[in-house]
Length: 135
Image (cartoon, rainbow, N blue to C red):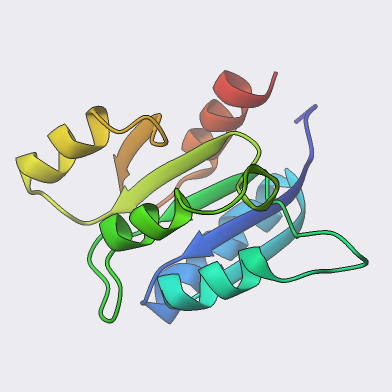
């Protein structure tokens, strides 16, 4: 893989999914850092935080829809209120088990979501996302 991202963020309430997706990303060798959160609230706190005088500013966010406390849709509402320097550089990908066609249609109409896909993440899908959005 030619392109190596600085930071990929995973937001999923299922620790097993975060663990599995972390392994896929590590095996692909496409990111220097992987940061996983089990809630949108934790992820927003992270995005608002400062590291070495700057916000983390991830390249790519994988977001689940169905989570307690804050759904993926609620996360996106709050995410859109962030300053540009706190947001992901390019892409938020809905990575979900939702089979609800309303979720798919809502994602298709959302400007921050270029892709809606079902879990689990595969190395092939990850490479395709990176090639389509970061080259």
